[in-house]
Length: 475
Image (cartoon, rainbow, N blue to C red; front, side):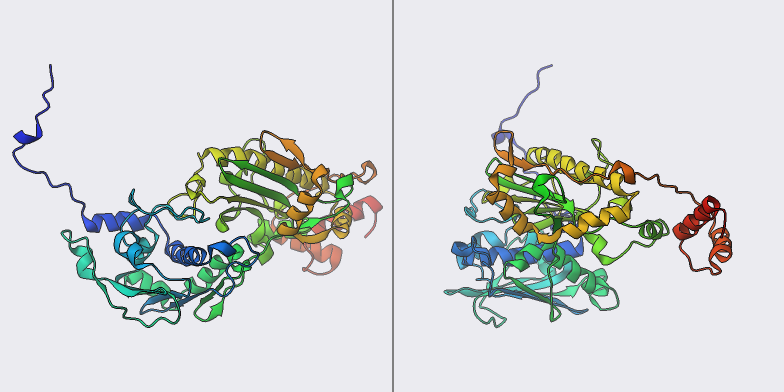
């Protein structure tokens, strides 16, 4: 049967395909967490500083002098910066559109992660029903107003731009979001740990930007960056000490830099026992796992899942035994569309070709140190000697060292180099076998009372003492 395709001029009427604004806004905000939407706004501030100061982005402190100030309470949310403001032409035609249009001016030369044109609007819709966005550049100033009426009116997709309402010192942007949704109002009210957790997350996810000079304050508290350093023995090139696995390469105009190694001593038996009993350990254990960075923005922090190579292709699943292992992988490019970043800027596209290629090196590096841990876990005291020979060295200094010691980096593939460390192994004379078993706590307490005359000894100490009693034939 032949299918007829009627011509346009025979159409009876028009079918309405215009979007429902409420549905659009709902779908836009449902897949992003509240704290991530705030991180989106801070990312926009960083992009503003980068545009305002593009010639300094290769300096060690390109963001020095720039400030992002965030105020959070149960009534409203305010974020303001001195990062250059939004040019009037960009504001009128592009910045407030819901999505990047084909004619949007490109950010050529900017190492950003913003590619979709939805971050600011999504954050506003996530938090409240009313917002004023004010901006001041060297030449222009204005305010744009979002209202509840606009949000429910499907016939109007334009919003008013008026003379600047809020006073801004210098050049920058100020966003005030009010008429907060009930859930957001609850999180912002001070009755929850939201602000504390947000401050921690900003320090983790924007730590590299902060290290380069940007100051961020949340409710007048200056955010401190989270840093990751590694144990490095400068004699390790002889195979006698600790050194991280290092890889540097390029793929489709993206520079890749990868390090994985030990950042602390191996966990002792008591720490493993505590973890098994639900104690997650000291705050420094938060560093363990992979930190994935795109253009200085942290996408994953201390990830311990399959998405960063744990538990696949011969790498064991993460366990407290591996708490001493940390890795950093950086992607950097002036062509952000080449980055493996998802729409929320807090996820990696797992099927991205560049990420799949890089993941092979991530897993290879992990195996070096999970194997090292497996070999030394039965001789923790002996392993401490390896740590004593090593220094705590920043990732930046390690990369600099290997760039200078070019003979250590071996070519791999068409455009990459790798340093595969030869780590110390236990001497055969020190070979030990670990004994581990579980018993009810009340039974362990009874035995502890017998062998130590108290109930305070750790389970591992109780077991070791019992073994010694039997071996020596006496208490």
